Image (cartoon, rainbow, N blue to C red; front, side, top):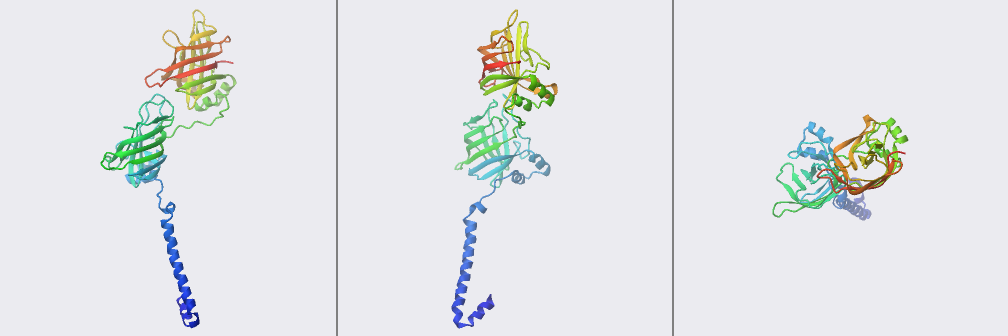
Length: 395
């Protein structure tokens, strides 16, 4: 290029061309610098925004050992959290951690109905430092969604390296999904330090993996019950042919659903009584209709019992259960796949018929109607369940 310019200089008539070339080269250089500056300063979406942090980022910050990383990887959960204010950053992953250090612990397990919620403890990286997010939801699971707006003592954020640096004054809301181990947070957290700015956190969190419901044909009667209880093919075939009966029962309250089919498998270990299974009929002065089914990811056994001396027959009976009468009882539990689907009741989670509710047995002694209020049998049992409609325990 220098030789070319020197040759042009030796030709007086073309000096103006040299000047033009030099000006053009200068403009191109300035423009290139300006363009590069524009790309680095005017497009923050390309290089100015940090990526959401992952479990790997947290591992590095807390210096987990390889053996600990192996454990933490199995408990690394997807998050979608955004922090702003005194702390700023996005969190895409976090691992379940102990309350006192950075040691990984097992992830949360979906709480059984009426048992307490697990405490959420998540280790994560925010703005290049490691923090522990705690969510402690009071009360017991009713297997339904829950929103908490009084966050005093419920939400806290603390530095793992220096636990005394914590944001414990919380306001806003935490939503808990029905599984009790996932939810949404929209909260402002403040340190108990003069002049401190709040940290705002929002998005979806998880401290465990909800159990997967096996695939099934939702349009097929009783299919949910077969799938959730992992029943064997031979037992499913038998139940499909002569044990799955049409129902028309509506549940309201702590369980909300419409039940259109239930199992009474009279060919396998039938037994009457308040926790009877696979029974449909009378024995002298006592009657039992046992219906088992699944709603959501839970399985239930509804026992409809009647008593009349000296012989029980068609008619209206009280649905209330007590010492003097069997009445109606709803049990939580599961069908045992290794015992041909026999129902195993949870002796701590059940509801009994109360008040003026009624159980009607039709003339065929295999069907009838129910209209009753059920109350839980323990302290954290919720508000109750109303069940009404038509039932059938045999074709």
